[in-house]
Image 1 (cartoon, rainbow, N blue to C red):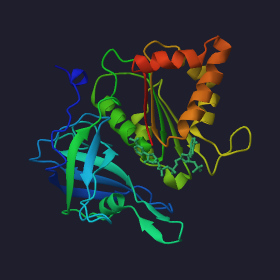
Image 2: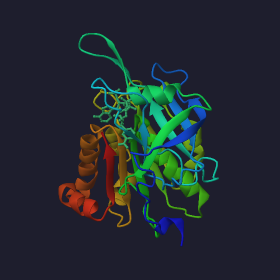
Image 3: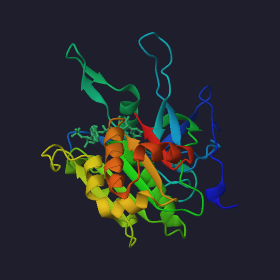
Image 4: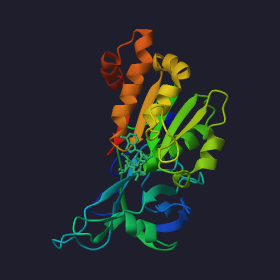
Length: 288
Ligand code: NAP
């Protein structure tokens, strides 16, 4: 059986009995940015935990919360393809943004789990469980074009998809529209360029605080979709197209408005088309 026809494995390691994974790598993806985003690679050897690209990993931070209860688990989109970055099948990679912000009283708040992961050094242990998620998966064969739209760390599953695509013989055309604040926040850029080098592939960047849209506002992924107009409109009508969105919830409205605008001249009502795409699992969203 080919990998593409496998059902996603679920809950192989339960949250009640998480596995102590060893940190293999913790790389700085944004050395020139004010934000700190890390590529964290964990060793799963001996856990029995397997996953498919597009799934999420549970991480249980150490310690207890303000009420004295163990911290709840957090889910992170997996950034590695199913056999791991090294292809050996024993690792999982995460894209982790260190969460630090000031609360209403002006005190600094540090996200419990993101800081645990961002501070982890090779050899440290991280308690993991999962995998989770069975909807945000690459389509099975035969595969039509993929339109992937990411904001920020929402790039993680698309890195996994593209690395998995590169391992197979598939020539599925892939479009990636990737939105970040500044050029220093572009995650995996060189790698993504290398993965999107097919004749029908496109990598389009929306760098919101350095580029402006047609109205003079911040350049967002939806604005870039509109610009892709003539290329994208026929794709949106392709019966095999799969559209994926991952990242900030706010991006969805702009993406939908762009699709509406692109399809209207073709006499297609996106409001009517979208439920069909959702039903056919060709419109897949993983945002928060
Ligand atoms: P970020 O840096 O805050 O934002 C990324 C880009 O999105 C910026 O260019 C930002 O522009 C832009 N943006 C903000 N509002 C937008 C809107 N309404 N439409 C289009 N673009 C918009 O992102 P981040 O801190 O990496 O956060 C990514 C989010 O994705 C987090 O909330 C994370 O929890 C979530 N996430 C979800 C998943 C998942 O669902 N599986 C996986 C990974 C991450 P400006 O800030 O310049 O306005």
